[in-house]
Image 1 (cartoon, rainbow, N blue to C red):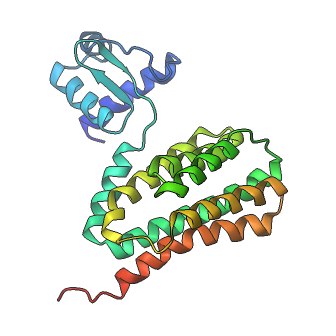
Image 2: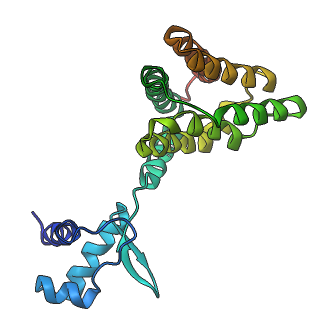
Length: 227
């Protein structure tokens, strides 16, 4: 293990041993130097590495804090590699998201989760569809709110990361094949199947929801690759 890695582990151990949580202040650089018996450069190098992965939040002029969980690094990496090989990379990403969401709708039904918010998002989506395209914000909100009753914050964070990558790359896919009214209808089909407790219909509706993206990807596959 390198010296930097050792210092990073030592800082993580301090967080764990003191029972610190996201947003809690961390010891200052001077305190870490004294506690760990190391120089300023070693501390700063370790803190920068921990900041890069979201474990440490450095706010200049305010101090250092335990970082909040974020997939920002994952989003940037996936989006960059997606630009390098859009067809295969985005196809893989959509496949993972589809599998995840098909499982999540079944879990909602299995747990009998109550939902008082998704219907309002559906109404907003349908209102948008009557006058123009459904906004990306409303579409994203539907998936966020639908799974909120599961009480698992990782679900929203992970799907949000997938969503952000897709929307950084979506313009490269060309225009959608489906009109706004069809988009809204597919989301309502998912919601109503979940509320009815129909697993088969819920999974089928979710797969139908992804058909539009798959069709746009198929158009890309039909374009000859540059030689």
